[in-house]
Image (cartoon, rainbow, N blue to C red; front, top):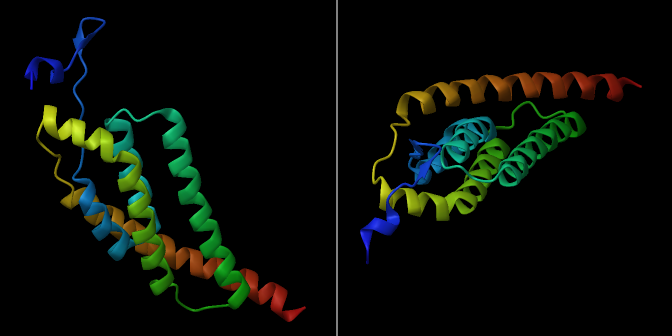
Length: 150
């Protein structure tokens, strides 16, 4: 295989090098933090890998749809916790993000061969995801209480 074909090309006189997280670690983000960490870091990764704007918009739409479904579930049932639902949705979203970025990630791995560290950003995103889920439960319980009393 000719390695010259896999070198970054010049665009307007500058080299366009891609960056990426290890996309297999999105599963950990989804399991420990839910939908929000996967949405934030997965979208950031898609931008770094130069995925199409249409793909990024689709991934964000799926993420926001899952957040809306989680809010609707809490508002409908009045559940006190969405930990299991959040983990299932987070891992499912990680599968979607991994599937959508796999070709670009493989190309990045061949050309660059190096991934960005995800630990600290992942930890921050997981904490934000836990706070977001707590806020979502509070909002959903409030909606449930308003409509349940009537």
